[in-house]
View 1: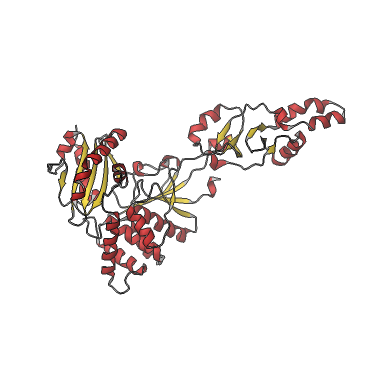
View 2: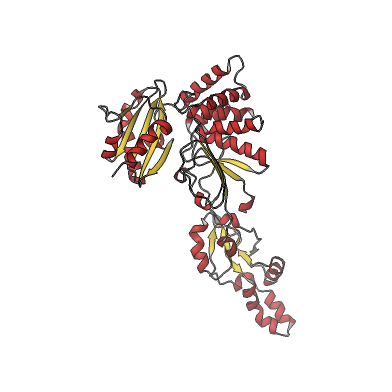
Length: 449
């Protein structure tokens, strides 16, 4: 049942290093503080940087949770079924014991129907009205399948409740058979449970905008937000804990919260949070970096045991160099994978933009890949009805970027970056999507007529 599930701590879609690390760190911290089962989750595949960090510190990735929609399987009551060939006497005994209709299945566990108390009584009415004990015995000796009409609705455990609720409302039955993907009986679900299902509980980290959140968030119970981005949050029915601060990484906020409660982070988790900071701040060189990020990074380096034989600063620099190298480069990756690995959507003035970012060690990697990257951006724009779709290609060695952009020409022309001969825009000095590029893009969208 859903009420036994943990509280999910989830980062944004297309999770980057910071989204994974902050989810893992905050789930650990909340579990330690509140003694409840908080569990880290991710909404997509891990990227190369995150894979490197997990391997470096010997950690497993968090659970993959693709959505938090309520599903029929969340509400199953695993009531034991009767097999074909069993008698109505067994059904009478089962109904008397459970006060539920009796599921009837074949030898392979496939459901044949649901035998209700009303149907059972109707099938025995003649025998019950008779004064002959022999007649009653004959009635109770009937096979259970002989009194089934097979007209009831069967639901699948993996179906979303929202997709079946109309069918459920129109049905006259109060309980429904539920099957798995192999059409094997797994339990019953009550109409009353489907009409008022409990909601999954979610804590959002490293984002607060609905379009970046796990699918189905509108059907979940949002408990808390911890973030370092602009505000774009959705309304909640009840007050929640909401903390958004202007630091370079959400992992910094998690680390600070642990420090404030005088908790020492496990070695591996300290290392992952450090990687979250280094990734989001480009090893503390991004304009989003604050003194708080630097202090947290140095303290986490000590907790992660990285300072042996070197200073904390050297340990941070060395780890950061290896981390960025692990995630940098276009390589032979499909253009769609390059774009989707770190992609975020933004809306303003009724217009939408999708901004992806990839890190390289030289712009020479970009030239041969421009045609397929452009085509992938065009498909992204068409599929998501975007006014702008762009890929920020950042040279992490030289601290510059180029923009591959498709969309409305008047919007592209309003961006303050010169166009180069290959059609890309020269975003010299831009390395931060959040602090440097996004305000410019949102300004262009907000001024569009």
